[in-house]
Length: 315
Image (tube, rainbow, N blue to C red; front, top):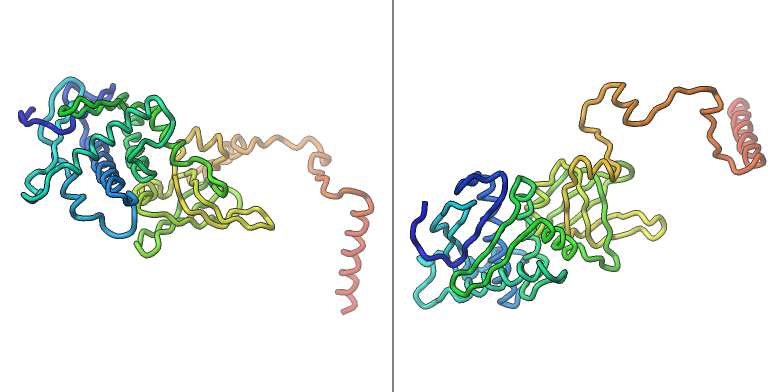
């Protein structure tokens, strides 16, 4: 279908999972929702504010950046998008929305050539754009953006999503990563928290802001790598907590390579033997563990054991 309306933004989606002019509803939502969020966050940056902060986004930003689908054409899938002009008061213009669209597309073009945060972007914008990576995992091969009014255009490809991840998680002096199962999420505005359970060791408490809320929700019960500014115990080096800057769900092969143990998968004894690389015991010598650094240390230990037993008998 094509409604014949002029568009402010034209998006072309290409990939083996798409028919001529056909796109799944989940892919359509997965495309338009991050795009809408990214536009709103760029507009916040253009206003001189952080793209993500507590509280609701200003009503003016929402009005001037709200998109509508006004047309769809065959040839992979081409979406015609325009700003929701009916919601803009007569004394206002769509300048903020148009500027946000231009800065967003120019930033996407910059990602093709340089590995740095584009002008007019911040981490919140990069987080929103990275959400488009879910489409690539479902068969999309390229997403193209065009601004018909001024000729600006850019392509988004899987390598650009990886580049965004690097920008988001750019190392900070106290930044660390923790991997494990994400088993708890508290999404109250007064204190957003989650908890990561590593395969070995104590759970790590994390705090996150609105920029990561969607990613945290989608990652619940999954094996993840969480990166952020860490609170570390000086004596042990153990990470006690994280302020999240990035969360990534690890797929089965990647998680397995990083040491995931499939606790949530029912396994029979043969599978457990294979997973743990168990071998038959050839002799009692195989059970020996060298935990004593010297014979003297072993003798001291045995002396203490015998002495404690003697005290117990006397008592």
